[in-house]
Image (cartoon, rainbow, N blue to C red):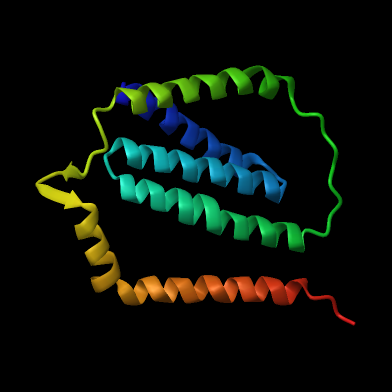
Length: 164
């Protein structure tokens, strides 16, 4: 079952990355990047890194991509083209979503309970040990990243201001 999910989300990740490269509209590229980030979160979950998967969804698929999308929509001066979507997207979209949701539901329901620890090679990794490393040993890079994101938000708001 894990192999099937790995293949599905690995292909979804590769497809999103290829879609990112071949699209011309920046919003389509940002949405493709969200698909890649979410697929990576599922791959982390399959590896037993639940904390890393949750952080991937919250930080990258959520906050960073919302910021990217906001800046792209703010700076995009071109007019939008109205499309009705492709027939292939409509034909494959809903069954694909249903299949992925079914696979995830089966995976989550077949588990015996949440795994508190994951085996990564010869190392025993727990969420407590990961948080100690993140908030004690790597506190300075963590806070510098927070300040960088804050500066990016302030810059986007400054660019959004209308000149009088």
